Image (tube, rainbow, N blue to C red):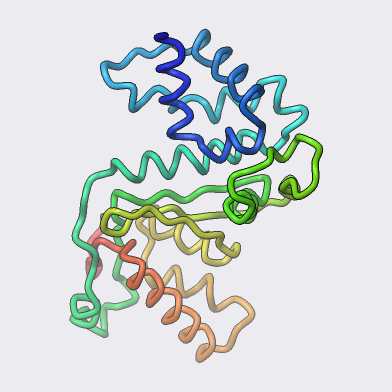
Length: 229
């Protein structure tokens, strides 16, 4: 009975993974995982934290090469859900930044945020599973099954706004800009990336639209005028 409690716990954090490989494969994956990585924390909340890494080398990955990427996306969502709260940066606070020092400004991101680099299009696959009602499994024959995700380098961001967790795919440019923001780079450095191959006006417009989206999604926690994070 204890094992089935563990199985249910992992299934709660990885519902799309279970739908993708099917209940039998998922059962075997979790069995192997729990034998290798038994719970070492008083809370079962952390039981699945090593599953994405474990799935990468599991024999099941031969039939489901996207296994680890999908597990990473699901665990990021679970992790973000429990992350600390933070008051998002407001438009008013951003507008109050001294214009002459805007290029030196550095953003901070909310704790409930994750940036993922993936080898498969699992964001699109996630949506397809939802649209298909959670199954049948991608690796099982039958009409209406979800097509496995293509192998292609992609990026995604995961964040929580209020009590809801969201995720979306990113183009390479936005992913790079978010990486720079996470690393504490200045707004001027971010704009340099956006200026490549663009006129100053188009680069400014692209930066404005991107930051506007970050504000609307609530992923920015603050901005510091010229002070390192």
